[in-house]
Image (cartoon, rainbow, N blue to C red; front, side, top):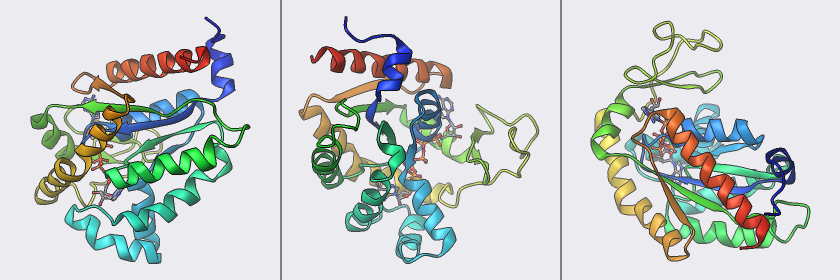
Length: 244
Ligand code: AP5
């Protein structure tokens, strides 16, 4: 089959992985697991933007009110931020994108960026991006988002209904007090879900037209969703190694 052992494939590089899905679908939860498994960085545009807001940078000042409303940050602000991040040396073997692209324009920008800056460099990953959409029933999403808590120090994500910490309100890893995200208030959640339907759902169509979209059932427990994603990634890598 020409793909070598799992360890060989991991060492060879993995290429870009794009996770799509509505707010609360489990992108962040799964991206962290996949990043750890393959030793590649998780690039969460939401996390990067929240960090800019917290540090009070110029980008943070421009993004703050937009994010608080549940709208998308303008595409032009995202490109500089993403280009900088994707050029970092830790991305050379591959990376997992969680929250980008979020508009068809961002998807087009990413394709052009990968073609010119990623695939042209022979030292970088050989695999074409795999685009995985996590599908979750709409009624589940509100519960997932209103129940979410996260650790401000290590970023671990919990849910008071489905994945509670061992001690209420404290991170299992470092004991920090868990926080509720500013945009996880019900009125903002509704705006985020609307923004997803109008602006981000077409991104899946963009990749579907190119024959690059695969989906997993995100209604299942976390471990089972991870197993589905890993299977898709491994199949994709075998296909890439075989040149099919
Ligand atoms: P961002 O931070 O990307 O938020 P999002 O897309 O709304 O996604 P979430 O982080 O809310 O959900 P998730 O899918 O990661 O789910 P999670 O794993 O946490 O973006 C925030 C804002 O930044 C945007 O609104 C926008 O303003 C701006 N922005 C970001 N990127 C942008 C871009 N590219 N362009 C423009 N603007 C941008 O899981 C949710 C909960 O469910 C957790 O509690 C978790 O424990 C639980 N859970 C997860 N999986 C399961 C499961 N299988 N079963 C049960 N519970 C589960």
